[in-house]
Length: 242
Ligand code: IPE
Ligand code: IPE
Ligand code: MG
Image 1 (cartoon, rainbow, N blue to C red):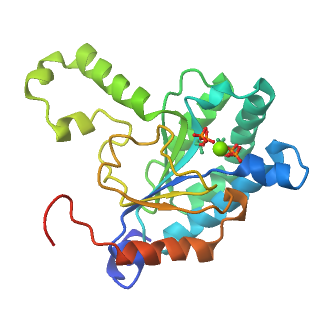
Image 2: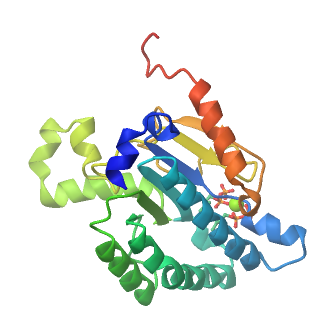
């Protein structure tokens, strides 16, 4: 799949290497129809499947999905437990399919703090997809941008303190969870809020932002394409002159 993807310049993947998505609105989607919030999260997983497939088909190399923030522990224990169970069930259900489609999965965030059986499933999925030559799929689980930056600083202090004297943006970036990955070109947030909620703080310095009030379970391929279209019309300057 990798070679074909490189060859086709008509697809959005030619100019869009990395998409990041804050998948918000699951709870409100469920509440609107009198369902428990977890039903919204379940529907959200089905949308993830479609979006992963479409991203890969579009020739985009990296997709980063925000699934659980370091602040989401503040939710009622029943919702947190329901989400952890849903993560496990989703890996069980879709893990093989990801391997078959040559998707390479990486989890961003702090694994410690998550349930032990979920951690081992996450490690297994990362191992079994490591050779994947297709889409690079990052799931941010127990992820916070500030936490990631602090972990990187501590990692350098513990393992390579002499680096502090010559630290550059590039060398610092190699201590982040997204090491060796390009920064996102496009960040999509569904659910109507216009904020970042502690997502990829370092990496989105020059990312194009795209917001929609559509709740994540209602997000469609058509709307995804609309975001691509808007992205195409943006003039990226990175501080320079175009
Ligand atoms: C996003 O949906 C998914 C997670 C944070 C796990 P929400 O659960 O935040 O949905 P709303 O924003 O309450 O509708
Ligand atoms: C952001 O959504 C986190 C995820 C989508 C995983 P939240 O619903 O947690 O964000 P806030 O609380 O509205 O900022
Ligand atoms: Mg929300």
